Length: 282
Length: 282
Image (cartoon, rainbow over all chains, first blue to last red):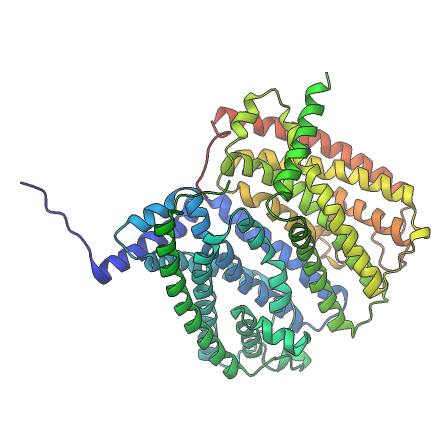
């Protein structure tokens, strides 16, 4: 008599795939405390350099809060770049991508699992940055509306990871330039999104173009809501009103999610038709 | 006796240059090489301009801009060597072959670092040129103390190569984190070395870390050789150029001894634990 095998199908399979892919991301760190230290503590020290630059030029204290918040949110951007956008590229390099496509589950579920695992890790990093930053530099948060901050955060993270899911497929078109492109997307993005300064200080058109990266509007809205009226200095540094930024983030989330679905389907078809799933670029 | 080290160094430099540059067209490679450092400089320019109302003629701006420009070498040489160890083991899986070949691994890694030094030099030159043209950095070509500059730069390359060797040793021992150890440490040193703000701005308890690091003296000497003295923002106003050079050379010698010992120990441990050809799948 053959043993009875329970098989999940449909949405149950989708959920199990999501959890299965998120698992190694979250628990991998628990098994590698040194990795956690290097990935969390060292970038935190680098971030503090910008705080001391502001101190050196006698900037209003609210700018220090801006740096800490920017650094916390940049944890998500780094994760989107290295852990989402380029992930399928690396998976192909080590031979996992073909297994993903052959498996009887959805690629969208695998991407979602990667995203959820990444969000957990990035949130841990962001929390450490905010807590230690606030403690070391005595940052005063004057939160205007907690539900609104929560909403902006949720929309920003959703839009960011949807963007990462979309780019995951596009990265498969890259060869060896993938790593260089990811590296190139860090610091220039910090400049364009106003990670360490209010985006309003850039030219209006540059800031508008940079708004295509969800981090730009998300950070700007959060700064306005968390450091109400520019903090003690009373400076108004918002680019657009938080409500408009929320609406824009919602639009970006939908566009990127649809884009991710479409590009994934396209990539899957192309990969199967052209046999490029196992092609590596050492 | 020196044939093997020289051959290892020369071949690794050529190989490093090929890996760094031949993945794309020369023009695109040049663009990729300069965009990242210019973006970091751009961040500093924007935040400095925002707070000071665009007072770029202040010595503080020149201090910050030049320190940041030269810090590119730290990321390139030191991080590059640690990255080379990780890349050869994980990505190309050639580290085991290099170990069994008649190659001196220390000189091989130094060669990979020097290849990055070449590309970084172009980047640094362009960054400084941008500073002179657009922000009127007070550097007069005829007034630069070239002998001091060149001696300092050369000592710095040795110092960074030794730091890179040390990190490569750690990278051999930490397969899961070998990719990020170099970048993480470079980021952390950015805070303590007085690269973008005078060390006096740091809390009193953290200053000794900066004073113990050769990078601090190296950056100070490079600034002085290019711009002369800048009263008020010098890290070591009471020390002459010769004093600084003496400290830099002494610390570099000390660091070299420590780096050679640490690399030797890490290398032995990595061999004993079978880590030379271990891949983590990250």
